[in-house]
Structure formats: structure tokens, C-alpha cells
Image (cartoon, rainbow, N blue to C red):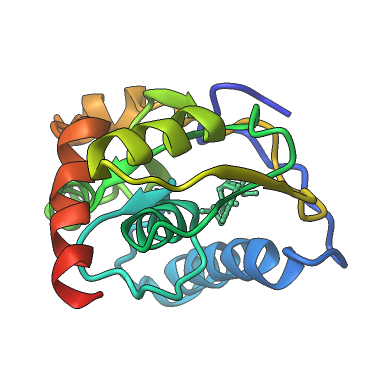
Amino acid sequence: LVHPQQETYWGHVNPIGDRACYDEGKRSAETLFVNYHKQNKVNIKIIRIFNTYGPKMHPNDGRVVSNFIVQALQNHDITVYGKGNQTRSFQYVDDLVEGMVRLMNSRDGFTGPVNVGNPNEFTILELAEKVIELTGSKSKIIYKPLPSDDPMQRQPDISLAKKELDWAPKVQLEEGLIKTIDFFKKII
Ligand code: UDP
């Protein structure tokens, strides 16, 4: 419900929906870590990872970037769920790894949570068109029902990561997609 999302936002999730095991699993993990930190003084760092993609994703991972690339390279229909006007901010995997390493090396006492993601936001339809363009595919876009509890928009506020970790993403969507497409070309 808050956009862009800061670390102070407590979230708004359905505890019994289709995505609940995923959403609540991440929330429970934060709770367990914080309690081990408070009770047993375990040194912890909590990272909030926003949509990430890149080489070595599984072709059947089911995430939107891998689905669209795999479909485009085979000239199969590109499956846009809903109208495709929902947005996501896509982070290239190398940027995420750099953020993780910086967080692990951050000052003692800084536990996070800290958002690590790319704030540049695109609609799912824009992503589909970009993938078709970069692969030179003959695929057509088709529309499928929107899964339940699918967020309409998602964008991280990365001010805290900039301040504490001196981190910001370097790889923008087109450059990252080209590298990811090269990977999938080799395995398909
Ligand atoms: N999506 C889509 N077609 C697909 C896979 C996903 O249109 O083949 C949409 C999905 O409905 C969501 C967005 O792309 O709105 C991102 O989905 P993903 O599962 O990659 O990540 P999420 O942000 O939902 O965790």
C-alpha cells in the first residue's frame, strides 16, 4: 500500500492467500532473526530483496523475466497476466550480490532491514515488448488471468542502502536483459 516502499513499512499481506507461504515465510524469517539477535546476541543482517533476474535462473522458475525470455526464444506466445499494466522494478543479479556483500561487511550494530533492488519501474507489458525487441522474436503477446493477490506495483526506496552501504544498482534493464538472453540462448 506504500509506494515506493521504505523499510519502515510493515506490509499488507493476505495470510491465507496463494502467495501466503512466500510472503509470510519472509516475514517469519525476519522475526526469527531479530529474536535470535535480541535474545542470543547473534550477529544478523536483514536484506529485503526486490525482484531479481539474471543468468543461471531456471527456465521453469516461473518468474516473469525468465518466462518471457524462454517464450520469446522459442517464438511461443508471451503470457502476460492481467492487463500487463502492473509494474515491477527489476534488479540484475550482480547488483544484488554486491549489495549483499556490502551489507555483510556493514558496521557492527547495523542489522537492517535494508532494501536492495532497482527502483526503475516498468509495466509488465513494457517488459514483454522489450524482450520481443531484444530477442527479435516472432512471439505474440497473449493475456491470461491475473493470479490472486498479485501486487499492482512494487518499487523499493533505496535511500537507506545508499546511506549505509554506499550502494546503488549499476546495471539497467536493457543491459541486464541482453546478458540474461545470452544465457538462455545457450541452454535452450
Ligand atoms: N507475470 C506475467 N507473466 C508471467 C509471469 C509473471 O505477466 O509469465 C506477472 C505477474 O503476474 C506479476 C509480475 O509479472 O505481476 C511479476 O511476477 P513474478 O512472479 O516474476 O514476481 P512477483 O513480483 O510477483 O513476486
